[in-house]
Image (cartoon, rainbow, N blue to C red):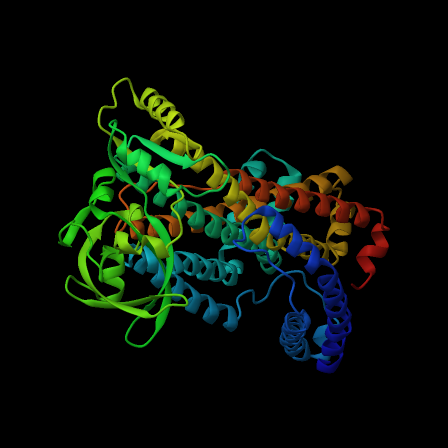
Length: 542
C-alpha cells in the first residue's frame, strides 16, 4: 500500500517538475526583462545560470511530494481490509496529533513574535510583524477542523432560519465534513493573510517614513533639477545660498559606505551635509552632544544607529569609501531626526567624494503670500541667473507628488512579488474544490433521491463557496489587523506620525478572485455530478 501511494506521487511529481523546469527556463529571461522595465531595480538585471535554481526547485517539489505521500500512505496502510469495504463521509478523527502539536508550536511562536514587536523598535519590529502573523496563519490552518466548520455553519445560520433547504444543506455539510471544510478555507486564509501582511507592512513602513519626514520638514520649498539629470549642480546650490530670499539651504549628498564593527562590517547609507543648515530646515534634536559644524574626522549618527551598535558621543567609528582607505572618526552628536536624518552624517568636506544631491530643502526668509507665491518668485530669480534648470515646488505639493509616485512603485512591487503567489493560491483553491467534489458523488445523488431539486443542490454549492471564502477572508483580516497593530506600536519608537496604509484595492481584488474561482469551480463540479445517473452514483464506490 505504501509503495503504491508513493509510486503514484512520483508518477505525478516527476513529470510536473520537468514541465515546471522547462517553463521556468523559457519564462525567466522574459521575466527579467519585464522587471527591468518597471524601473524598480537600481541596475539592469541579467538572467544568470538557471541550473542551480531549477535543480533546487525541482528537488524541493519532489521531496515535499514524497513526504506528503508517505504521510498519506501511513494512514492508508492502517486501514483494516474489512474496514476498507465500508465507507463513511463523516470525519471520525478530524484533529490528529500532528495538527495539535504543530498548531500549538506555531501559535506559541506567532503569539510571542507579535507580543515582542511593539517594544522591539522599527528595525526589529519588521521581521516580527511579518513572521508572527505568518506563524499565526499556519496555526489557524492546522487547527482548522476544530473551529472552521462551526464558523461556516454560523455564517449560514440565517439561511437555515429562513427555511432555505440549500442553506441548511450547506451548513450541515460544513459541520459534518470538518476536514473538507478546513481544506476549503485554508488556501483563502493563507494567501489573503500572507499577501495582506506583507504588503500592508511594506506600505505602512513607507507611509510612516514619509509622514515623519514631512512633519519634521520646516523648509517651505523643495528645489530639484528640471533638466533630467537628477542631480543638483554646485552652481545651482551656490545661487540658492546667495539669494536674499533664502535663510537656509540643506542638500545632503548621499554616499554609500562600509562601516566596520568589532566583528563584522556592513554597508551603510550616509550623507555629507551641513549640519547647522540641516537643523534649520528640519526639526532635529541632539540626544547627545550638540548640533554644530562637523570638523574633519568627526561624524554625527542617528539615535537608531547609536542604539543598534552602541555608539555615543566620543566613541570612535571606522568607515571607508569603497575603493578608499579606512577612516577613523569621532562621534560628535547623536541626533533624533527620524526619517529626515541619515544614519550617518559626514562633514561637508566629504561632499567631493559623495554623489551630487538630488534635491535641496529651502527655508525662506520671508514666505509672505504663501509657499506657492514664494516658490514662483524664487524660481523666476533662479531663471534670471541662468545655470542649471531647476523646479521649485512648495513642500506640501512635493510630498504629495512623492506619495503618488511611491504608491505606483508599491503597486509594481505588489504585482512582482505577490502576483505569482496569488496565482498559485488560486490554483490551490480550484484544486482543493475539484478533489473535494470528486468524493461527493454519492452525497449529492442521495440528496437528489430524497427530493432535493437540481437548483437547490447548485445553491447549496454556491452557499458553501461563499461561506468558506468569507470565513477565510475574515480570519485573514483579523491576522492582518493584529500584525499591523503590533507593527505600528513598534514604529512609534522611531517615528511620530504613523499612518495606516493598507492596499485595500489589491486585497479586495484577491478576495474577489478567490470567491470567483470557488463559485465557478463548485458550480461546474456540481453540474458534472448532476448529469450522472442517481442510482448508479449511490451504488458506485468512489
